[in-house]
Image (cartoon, rainbow, N blue to C red; front, side, top):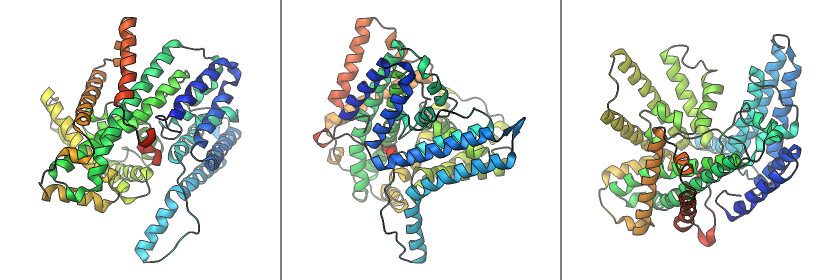
Length: 484
């Protein structure tokens, strides 16, 4: 079930209505049932994997609780519990996401013909809920939270439907704490209004911008060998916009859906294309994954505590793993490694600036750094979008050897589509600049007189309905990050 589908427009209001009507003590049970139904709309049999991950990490939490002694844990027992939890969960993830890829690589390297007698389908969202469940085990081990005793409430933490299949990857200290207090929360009109506005804005990002940009991007990448510099460069920029609006659109709808239910999810994006460095970009892009890798991989590896060379090595490891997390393909690894290289270059540059006491950026200097950071990020996005490293390299080669120009109308978008897309991206930029300067767009709308406020609401809804892109027979377009 997709957020941008008719099914969700029926499912969500029904869930909300029953949620606020039934006795408060049964709310988390209702949300758990709704969450499993939401996931089983894709693949009922793979709900077993969520349940398995839930049971493993729930029991690991109880085991760690039993292993407590005054002042800490029985060290060996506690470490064994954490290791078993991590190995079992990551083994499930490896089998479904990377096993076939490993076999293919072995066959390519050794010219063998190994095969498995069955097909492996990637369960939707497995990378997200696996990481979320693992973070709970590690947080309990570190003493950051108490082990959850109620398995139903814990199961809801792992499977909460708004963020189940594409994040944000929530921490137990935030989401599980709110679930434990769900019976104390009352209907809040302000939260419902704010949540619905977020959902409308998320739909705008997905349907009006991302899915429209995707038409041009897909056509160019499918026929890149017939295109020139202008078409290819524009396709790279359009994909940067597409993936931001697609993923941020999902995260915004997820945050809005949860907000209607009186639950606050973390922000997953904070104007990433206004970053002035790659390091800052990763503090703003997919924040939940960046912070996960920082806390559970980068810091345990030593972080920046063991000198500049070790810091740079740790950065490369983290970004290489991050690339692999996104998909079982070398072009994702290449994307991650590129960002690791960019990060390390940025680290060296920052040390140079600090050493030579380079003065604070001017406005023009800041704009220049934003543009440069976007261009560098966009280069890496080509590897992310391509189907292989060879296609990405071929894309860049074609860009610099062919300067023939074709009409942009030959790639699926008509004149009015380009006008709508340009106006929508301009609106997105205005909203991002406002947020960057501490001006909250929603708060400005909420402060308006009621007649003007409702006019904006209706205009936004009709704008999405009229200018949104819909598939054949109004089939909903899948979100990019569902495949991860």
